[in-house]
Length: 269
Image (cartoon, rainbow, N blue to C red; front, side):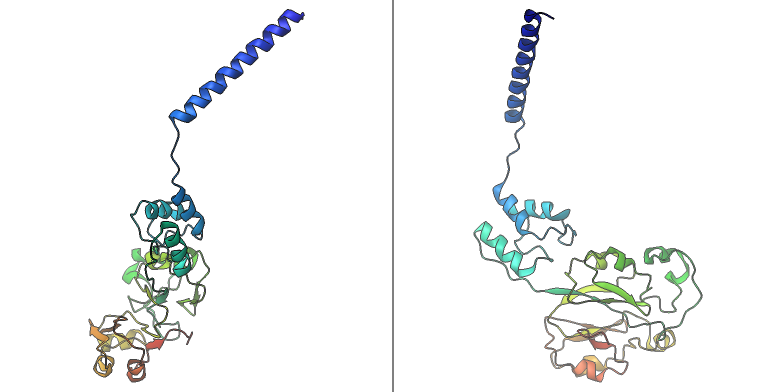
Protein backbone atom coordinates (compact mmCIF):
# COMPACT_ATOMS: atom_id res chain seq x y z
CA UNK A 1 0.00 0.00 0.00
CA UNK A 2 1.56 3.34 -1.09
CA UNK A 3 1.20 6.78 0.46
CA UNK A 4 -1.43 7.90 -2.10
CA UNK A 5 -3.75 5.01 -1.18
CA UNK A 6 -3.42 5.78 2.52
CA UNK A 7 -4.15 9.47 1.94
CA UNK A 8 -7.18 8.64 -0.22
CA UNK A 9 -8.57 6.33 2.47
CA UNK A 10 -8.11 9.00 5.14
CA UNK A 11 -9.86 11.60 2.98
CA UNK A 12 -12.79 9.28 2.30
CA UNK A 13 -13.17 8.45 6.01
CA UNK A 14 -12.86 12.12 6.93
CA UNK A 15 -15.47 13.21 4.42
CA UNK A 16 -17.78 10.43 5.55
CA UNK A 17 -17.35 11.53 9.17
CA UNK A 18 -18.14 15.14 8.28
CA UNK A 19 -21.24 14.05 6.34
CA UNK A 20 -22.52 11.88 9.19
CA UNK A 21 -21.85 14.66 11.71
CA UNK A 22 -23.76 17.20 9.60
CA UNK A 23 -26.63 14.74 9.08
CA UNK A 24 -26.95 14.04 12.81
CA UNK A 25 -26.74 17.72 13.64
CA UNK A 26 -29.53 18.61 11.21
CA UNK A 27 -31.62 15.66 12.43
CA UNK A 28 -31.20 16.81 16.02
CA UNK A 29 -32.54 20.24 15.10
CA UNK A 30 -35.41 18.95 12.97
CA UNK A 31 -36.56 16.29 15.43
CA UNK A 32 -35.77 18.19 18.60
CA UNK A 33 -38.22 17.53 21.43
CA UNK A 34 -38.81 20.52 23.66
CA UNK A 35 -38.26 19.67 27.31
CA UNK A 36 -40.62 21.26 29.83
CA UNK A 37 -38.29 22.29 32.63
CA UNK A 38 -41.12 22.43 35.15
CA UNK A 39 -42.17 18.91 34.17
CA UNK A 40 -38.64 17.68 34.84
CA UNK A 41 -38.55 19.46 38.20
CA UNK A 42 -41.94 18.04 39.17
CA UNK A 43 -40.83 14.54 38.17
CA UNK A 44 -37.77 14.89 40.41
CA UNK A 45 -40.00 16.02 43.28
CA UNK A 46 -42.33 13.02 43.00
CA UNK A 47 -41.43 9.91 45.06
CA UNK A 48 -40.81 7.72 42.00
CA UNK A 49 -42.89 4.75 43.12
CA UNK A 50 -44.79 4.62 39.81
CA UNK A 51 -47.68 2.99 41.67
CA UNK A 52 -50.42 4.54 39.53
CA UNK A 53 -52.43 5.57 42.59
CA UNK A 54 -52.72 9.08 41.17
CA UNK A 55 -54.66 7.81 38.18
CA UNK A 56 -51.83 8.41 35.71
CA UNK A 57 -49.35 5.94 34.16
CA UNK A 58 -46.53 6.38 36.62
CA UNK A 59 -44.79 9.46 38.00
CA UNK A 60 -43.78 10.74 34.56
CA UNK A 61 -47.40 10.74 33.45
CA UNK A 62 -48.46 12.66 36.55
CA UNK A 63 -45.58 15.13 36.18
CA UNK A 64 -46.68 15.93 32.63
CA UNK A 65 -50.30 16.32 33.72
CA UNK A 66 -49.42 18.70 36.57
CA UNK A 67 -47.06 20.74 34.38
CA UNK A 68 -49.80 21.09 31.74
CA UNK A 69 -52.42 22.10 34.28
CA UNK A 70 -54.39 18.87 33.91
CA UNK A 71 -53.85 17.72 37.50
CA UNK A 72 -53.47 19.57 40.83
CA UNK A 73 -50.18 19.79 42.68
CA UNK A 74 -51.50 17.50 45.44
CA UNK A 75 -52.53 14.65 43.12
CA UNK A 76 -49.85 12.25 44.39
CA UNK A 77 -51.29 10.18 47.27
CA UNK A 78 -47.90 8.74 48.20
CA UNK A 79 -46.02 12.02 48.51
CA UNK A 80 -48.70 13.69 50.62
CA UNK A 81 -48.48 17.30 51.76
CA UNK A 82 -44.68 17.48 51.63
CA UNK A 83 -44.51 16.64 47.92
CA UNK A 84 -47.58 18.75 47.16
CA UNK A 85 -45.93 21.75 48.81
CA UNK A 86 -42.70 21.27 46.86
CA UNK A 87 -44.56 20.95 43.56
CA UNK A 88 -46.61 24.05 44.37
CA UNK A 89 -43.38 26.00 44.83
CA UNK A 90 -42.18 24.84 41.41
CA UNK A 91 -45.44 26.02 39.88
CA UNK A 92 -45.43 29.26 41.85
CA UNK A 93 -48.81 28.65 43.45
CA UNK A 94 -50.39 27.87 46.79
CA UNK A 95 -50.41 24.22 47.75
CA UNK A 96 -53.92 22.77 47.87
CA UNK A 97 -54.98 21.12 51.10
CA UNK A 98 -54.68 17.35 51.07
CA UNK A 99 -56.13 15.00 53.65
CA UNK A 100 -54.01 11.98 54.51
CA UNK A 101 -55.86 8.79 53.72
CA UNK A 102 -55.35 5.14 54.58
CA UNK A 103 -56.82 1.91 53.28
CA UNK A 104 -59.37 0.04 55.41
CA UNK A 105 -60.77 -3.47 54.93
CA UNK A 106 -64.48 -3.60 55.83
CA UNK A 107 -64.58 -7.17 57.12
CA UNK A 108 -64.18 -8.82 60.53
CA UNK A 109 -64.95 -12.35 59.39
CA UNK A 110 -61.92 -14.23 60.59
CA UNK A 111 -61.77 -17.98 60.12
CA UNK A 112 -63.11 -18.67 63.62
CA UNK A 113 -66.00 -16.22 63.21
CA UNK A 114 -67.47 -17.35 59.90
CA UNK A 115 -68.91 -20.49 58.38
CA UNK A 116 -68.09 -22.07 55.02
CA UNK A 117 -70.44 -23.62 52.48
CA UNK A 118 -67.76 -25.90 51.05
CA UNK A 119 -64.00 -26.48 50.89
CA UNK A 120 -62.09 -24.73 48.11
CA UNK A 121 -58.84 -26.13 46.69
CA UNK A 122 -58.44 -24.08 43.51
CA UNK A 123 -56.22 -21.16 42.50
CA UNK A 124 -55.54 -18.91 45.47
CA UNK A 125 -56.40 -15.62 43.81
CA UNK A 126 -59.41 -13.65 45.01
CA UNK A 127 -60.25 -12.58 41.46
CA UNK A 128 -60.68 -16.20 40.40
CA UNK A 129 -63.36 -16.79 43.04
CA UNK A 130 -65.92 -14.93 40.93
CA UNK A 131 -66.06 -18.09 38.80
CA UNK A 132 -66.97 -20.45 41.65
CA UNK A 133 -70.34 -20.94 43.41
CA UNK A 134 -71.43 -17.98 45.57
CA UNK A 135 -68.19 -16.16 44.80
CA UNK A 136 -66.19 -18.22 47.26
CA UNK A 137 -66.45 -20.83 50.02
CA UNK A 138 -67.47 -18.43 52.80
CA UNK A 139 -71.17 -18.39 53.65
CA UNK A 140 -70.97 -14.60 53.71
CA UNK A 141 -70.76 -13.62 50.06
CA UNK A 142 -69.62 -10.11 51.02
CA UNK A 143 -66.66 -11.18 53.16
CA UNK A 144 -62.91 -11.14 52.61
CA UNK A 145 -61.78 -14.24 50.72
CA UNK A 146 -58.37 -14.19 52.39
CA UNK A 147 -56.24 -15.32 49.45
CA UNK A 148 -54.15 -12.14 49.49
CA UNK A 149 -54.51 -10.74 45.98
CA UNK A 150 -54.38 -7.30 47.61
CA UNK A 151 -51.17 -8.31 49.40
CA UNK A 152 -49.48 -9.18 46.11
CA UNK A 153 -50.68 -5.92 44.54
CA UNK A 154 -49.48 -3.59 47.31
CA UNK A 155 -46.10 -2.02 46.41
CA UNK A 156 -45.45 -0.92 50.00
CA UNK A 157 -45.90 -4.20 51.92
CA UNK A 158 -48.71 -2.49 53.83
CA UNK A 159 -51.37 -5.19 53.79
CA UNK A 160 -51.31 -8.79 55.00
CA UNK A 161 -53.79 -11.58 55.59
CA UNK A 162 -54.36 -12.40 59.25
CA UNK A 163 -56.57 -15.40 60.08
CA UNK A 164 -58.42 -15.21 56.79
CA UNK A 165 -58.92 -11.44 56.57
CA UNK A 166 -56.72 -8.75 55.02
CA UNK A 167 -55.39 -6.19 57.52
CA UNK A 168 -53.76 -2.86 56.64
CA UNK A 169 -50.63 -1.51 58.33
CA UNK A 170 -51.59 2.16 58.70
CA UNK A 171 -48.04 3.41 58.95
CA UNK A 172 -46.85 1.67 55.80
CA UNK A 173 -49.95 2.41 53.71
CA UNK A 174 -49.53 5.25 51.20
CA UNK A 175 -53.16 5.29 50.04
CA UNK A 176 -52.14 4.48 46.46
CA UNK A 177 -55.45 2.69 45.95
CA UNK A 178 -54.08 -0.46 44.32
CA UNK A 179 -55.63 -2.75 46.91
CA UNK A 180 -58.93 -0.89 46.51
CA UNK A 181 -58.93 -1.49 42.77
CA UNK A 182 -57.95 -5.16 42.88
CA UNK A 183 -60.37 -6.40 45.57
CA UNK A 184 -63.22 -8.21 43.75
CA UNK A 185 -65.52 -7.87 46.76
CA UNK A 186 -65.01 -4.09 46.98
CA UNK A 187 -64.22 -4.41 50.67
CA UNK A 188 -61.32 -1.97 50.73
CA UNK A 189 -61.75 1.79 50.73
CA UNK A 190 -59.68 4.84 51.58
CA UNK A 191 -60.67 6.60 54.79
CA UNK A 192 -59.19 9.65 56.54
CA UNK A 193 -56.09 8.74 58.53
CA UNK A 194 -57.15 11.00 61.41
CA UNK A 195 -60.50 9.25 61.81
CA UNK A 196 -60.81 6.64 64.52
CA UNK A 197 -63.80 4.49 63.71
CA UNK A 198 -64.93 2.42 60.75
CA UNK A 199 -67.56 -0.23 60.11
CA UNK A 200 -65.70 -3.51 59.73
CA UNK A 201 -68.43 -5.31 57.79
CA UNK A 202 -69.88 -5.16 54.29
CA UNK A 203 -72.69 -7.72 54.63
CA UNK A 204 -76.02 -6.40 53.36
CA UNK A 205 -78.21 -9.35 54.32
CA UNK A 206 -80.95 -9.17 56.93
CA UNK A 207 -79.76 -9.61 60.51
CA UNK A 208 -81.08 -13.15 60.86
CA UNK A 209 -79.21 -14.28 57.75
CA UNK A 210 -76.04 -12.41 58.67
CA UNK A 211 -76.05 -14.01 62.12
CA UNK A 212 -75.92 -17.47 60.58
CA UNK A 213 -73.09 -16.54 58.23
CA UNK A 214 -70.84 -14.56 60.55
CA UNK A 215 -70.78 -14.09 64.32
CA UNK A 216 -69.50 -10.52 64.03
CA UNK A 217 -71.48 -9.23 61.03
CA UNK A 218 -73.53 -6.03 61.00
CA UNK A 219 -77.21 -6.89 61.56
CA UNK A 220 -78.52 -3.48 60.52
CA UNK A 221 -80.20 -2.84 63.88
CA UNK A 222 -79.76 0.93 63.59
CA UNK A 223 -78.63 1.48 67.19
CA UNK A 224 -75.51 3.25 65.97
CA UNK A 225 -77.57 5.61 63.84
CA UNK A 226 -79.96 6.43 66.69
CA UNK A 227 -77.13 7.23 69.09
CA UNK A 228 -74.93 9.32 66.80
CA UNK A 229 -75.25 13.00 67.92
CA UNK A 230 -73.95 14.31 64.58
CA UNK A 231 -76.06 12.14 62.24
CA UNK A 232 -72.81 10.78 60.84
CA UNK A 233 -73.95 7.14 60.86
CA UNK A 234 -76.64 5.80 58.56
CA UNK A 235 -77.96 2.29 58.00
CA UNK A 236 -78.91 1.29 54.47
CA UNK A 237 -79.44 -2.22 53.14
CA UNK A 238 -78.89 -3.57 56.67
CA UNK A 239 -75.37 -2.18 56.86
CA UNK A 240 -74.00 0.87 58.69
CA UNK A 241 -71.84 3.51 57.03
CA UNK A 242 -70.00 6.51 58.47
CA UNK A 243 -69.92 9.97 56.92
CA UNK A 244 -66.43 11.15 57.81
CA UNK A 245 -67.25 14.75 57.04
CA UNK A 246 -69.72 14.68 59.95
CA UNK A 247 -68.02 12.23 62.31
CA UNK A 248 -66.32 13.78 65.36
CA UNK A 249 -64.89 10.52 66.73
CA UNK A 250 -67.11 10.58 69.82
CA UNK A 251 -67.13 6.74 69.88
CA UNK A 252 -70.84 6.41 70.79
CA UNK A 253 -71.57 4.28 67.73
CA UNK A 254 -68.74 1.95 68.65
CA UNK A 255 -69.84 1.70 72.26
CA UNK A 256 -73.48 0.96 71.41
CA UNK A 257 -72.91 -1.53 68.57
CA UNK A 258 -74.11 -4.93 69.84
CA UNK A 259 -71.82 -6.78 67.42
CA UNK A 260 -68.79 -4.55 68.10
CA UNK A 261 -68.04 -4.20 64.41
CA UNK A 262 -67.71 -0.41 64.53
CA UNK A 263 -64.09 -0.46 65.50
CA UNK A 264 -61.25 1.85 66.33
CA UNK A 265 -59.29 0.86 63.24
CA UNK A 266 -56.10 2.42 64.57
CA UNK A 267 -55.64 -0.80 66.52
CA UNK A 268 -55.39 -4.34 65.17
CA UNK A 269 -58.12 -5.63 67.48
